[in-house]
Length: 377
Ligand SMILES: Cc1cc2nc3c(=O)[nH]c(=O)nc-3n(C[C@H](O)[C@H](O)[C@H](O)COP(=O)(O)OP(=O)(O)OC[C@H]3O[C@@H](n4cnc5c(N)ncnc54)[C@H](O)[C@@H]3O)c2cc1C
Image (cartoon, rainbow, N blue to C red):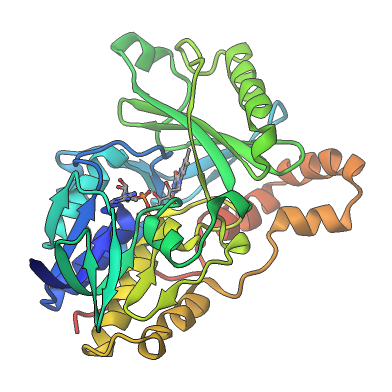
């Protein structure tokens, strides 16, 4: 039987960040993933600088052979209404391709990687776990995304949870399409639904275009997605035929998260823990930060991996992400009658001050939250 100190289920940003931090302190770590990397992941591929800073990624080195689109502004609007362009003096975001980014993080982590290996069984035997009947581990980290089997093992039932659903498509533009496409890489476009329960986006990343839409109410998504595609088509913004089918995936926003995240010798990170930011749906930064925080708590436990020592992780999440609370759409919905929300949101979205200081600086960019910094223990 193989053995390790920590076994991580899932090699996405949460799992590989956790592995990287553990390996920097020399802990024997295995990552298993049911897929073989590089693998695609349904995602817009927009990240904030805090992600690169927390992981100490050299922008020049990363960007030398992969897509790293610098973003210095955003165009925001209520779909079909006047757009506001907000520009910054420095890069405030980046566009990456998950196909490249996740593979880079996983390989760089220094962990032993078992690809094409799904979690099939998890058994507690005295003070350790036996994974798939083959690997002994003192700690198991669940990093398998929204439907993570380790989260299920701890009692999560995705069918009973309120998840956000988002859909996207990503494709490479041909030479003529690049000329015809009016979306600028440095200034992605966000189009909010009039009821403020979701938004569509157009991100251009190098030669790639990513279009998508996300909604808090899963049942309304198909109509909103087709309305958004119709809007893009009528406005001839893309310079390419508007795609007819999008690929979708569900995940939890932090404000809906009620999962148990810690047990004896177990922690959940990233989407498995339901940590995506409530206002923007950004999930990569919380995935990376929770992976690093989990690693820090595991290292501090110094081999005593019980519920008491590992529960420090829950405290660390609360101080990083705040208490679980209502997001802006719920607050707006409670204070303003439904029939007035459309006009109210149109007014707010046409305000330059609101677009910069609230939508972008607070909700999307989290400019008030500095990047996590850890030294190896
Ligand atoms: C359409 C869409 C657009 C999005 N756009 C953005 C965006 O632009 N920016 C942003 O920050 N966030 C975005 N998100 C959210 C973001 O994609 C997630 O929050 C993020 O990927 C979470 O990372 P993770 O490591 O927790 O999980 P994942 O990235 O989902 O990785 C989980 C890994 O676990 C593996 N796995 C699953 N089950 C098993 C198993 N049984 N055994 C072994 N391995 C398993 C999977 O193969 C996968 O590699 C978007 C989401 C969607 C749906």
